[in-house]
Image (cartoon, rainbow, N blue to C red; front, side, top):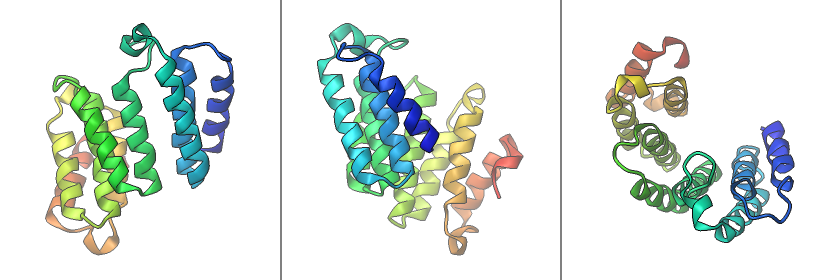
Length: 187
């Protein structure tokens, strides 16, 4: 995680004061890495930089799905950072905003956002709801979208379930679904 934060910082300074997608994306990536390192204040500061840089982007950069940085991506990254920091209320608000901006046909990103939501639900003890969200996120995906990243994120949700609840039916169903797709990912 420290290496990710350092790389994001090097990328962030590349564009200088230029208004480009990297100027917004890199500090958002750094914020998520810092959150994973437990550096909450630094993560929030980096995300503020990302939001300021995003506000300076022109419409073309905000609309370009391949080389730009969109509002929905920013909202997702904000939500992911807050999920990691354990600020479930702010996380759920940002993740809901992100989901509203993605079309229902955008399966992969919607599933990953839902798995962030499941992680947030786990943090507040809503184990059954978290497992249900995870089951829906993975189970509703067309087979071609059940990629390693989705299955690994779903497995991290299952593996974060407290031992006392690991055998509840919804958690067991999610674990079984992941194991049928990628057996090595669950404990």
